Length: 251
Image: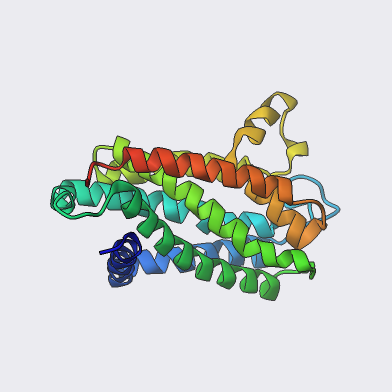
């Protein structure tokens, strides 16, 4: 088999495995929907009230997208590694030509497809139930690229967490510990003006910050986004390389 055939075969198996787990499908698509309904439709923004949710509704579109872009690949890839390791599947894969890099690439492609569909659902729901207005411009063509690159980045990080954790429960705990601070402290739901000055370098160090900045420039601000995409792509390449190295040996 060629490398492309090996990757596509593993990706097909991973996609079928995901679709068979109905709980995973439910939380991938409907957990972000619950957040949109609660914070977007019920709490709503208060543009002149100060404090949290004081920005226009469109400001928070990147935050809603970040929920699936961040949580899903971290937990799914990490759990897959833990599940494969516990079931001795990596030893079986070691008898095939599939390499660690190809394994991670296949699962990354599946996550890109799944999260791309979930992101489209979330974007449509945000526009339907909130006062958010989408900035229509040619830059919208770059939005799927931001989603795909960010998903790849967090697939790499998820692989690292899966290799370090000693069980599937450990993966979930580790992914939530990493994801929750990133979600709220990466220019998604909390504007930098509400954070102390000494903490801003940590915000700049978060990969999710560049996703939020770039997508916000596309859908809301109309500012420059190419630099954020370049940084995100470089980080994604680095995390994927580290994640592939962390995957238990299959070659």
